[in-house]
Amino acid sequence: MVEYLDNLIAHIGLLGLLVLGLAAALEYVVPPFPGDTITLLGGVYAVRGEHPWPLVFLVVVAGSVAGAFINYQVGRWLVGRFERRPGDAFFGITHARLEAVQGQMRHRGPWLLLANRFIPGVRGLIFVAAGAAHMPRSNALILGALSAMAHTGLVLALGAAVGGNLERLEALMWRYQRAVLGLVVVGVMAVVVRALAKRKSPAT
Image (cartoon, rainbow, N blue to C red; front, side, top):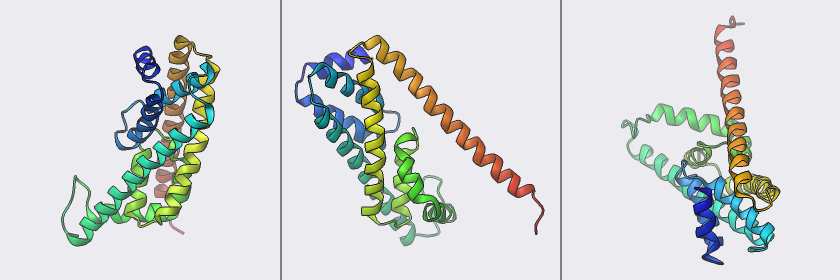
């Protein structure tokens, strides 16, 4: 797949930058979309001299912020629907569950938004939750942009590290995804263990 994407983006010139930006946005809206792989290719193109580093960086960050904005608006729409019809469930989400999510976002929201770009699969849902919790849009997008800048810099550096070698890129991408997934699993397990420990602890 990496070789196909490489050939596609390499043959469309500056439109390849548009592909990089759209990939970053779609990764929020459609979580299974392989946006990180395409961003890694951006680092390869920068090394090859096909696209300038600063422009690749800005396009990918802008795409990430655009995707975050779309999901934030989905969250605002979702909470509006519940406010109009609080007794109804929507896609299995009850009003009580929504209120619990809103409470979590008000408590941990800024940290989740700062880390969102490094959390695969659920990064888009964090912005949906932010919108549902009525977090200020500007604050959410600024924190999302900071996260996107850190993540994009890292991914482009990894892409540059392979120096245009697609086989090394595929191997590096696989290791990167395994490492991130491992960190997410460890984090989830830590949260579950902590919650279970709190339940078992005697009331004071």
